[in-house]
Image (cartoon, rainbow, N blue to C red):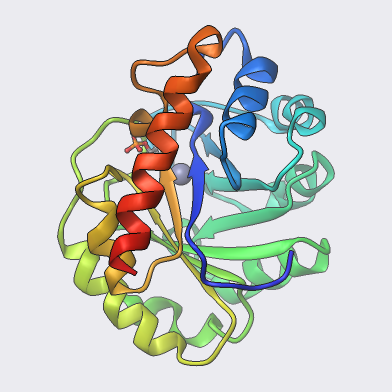
Length: 229
Ligand code: DX5
Ligand code: ZN
């Protein structure tokens, strides 16, 4: 993947039909998704449980674009190798998930995959300043992680602007996750974000049999973001 700051829409399959992941992934990719965002939750770091490495491995053959794996787990280091082997193209870990984010990012890079670092809404950007030279992406959470369909937290817009300033010339994506809609996407795109995760806003109203709805939703979010960029 060569670097650019074009808007990338990354539907979160947390909002997909859990009995039909292969078809759901094919449907969102056919309808224009740039990345497939996989939300991994452990019932400890966040109050919900989702996908272990075998599930992610089962998604892999269906993903033709880029599999973006967001680990909301603590500890995270013991599981990095398993998620890399499951086929992640990028692994994002939370700075809040342990005391050694630098070591965590090194462990991700050692697997030969791209590395992201995520910050929760209450966590200052200073916490990631010293790993910026190592990462491919900063994920700014605009909801408290754990569930889809939550309301966008607006302090993430100013945080995005400051993150973009901190990044300077470095080839680092800024991803926004949580409450992204046609209303909020322009705010974060204008502030410097280029990768937008959207769960409910992509899947709402559609299904694998009504996949054009996914396409309409993806195009609407992309258009709103690009107009603001
Ligand atoms: C939240 C997850 C998100 C979530 C986004 O913990 O990391 O990826 O699924 O869902 P929406 O877009 O519905 O806020
Ligand atoms: Zn996520």
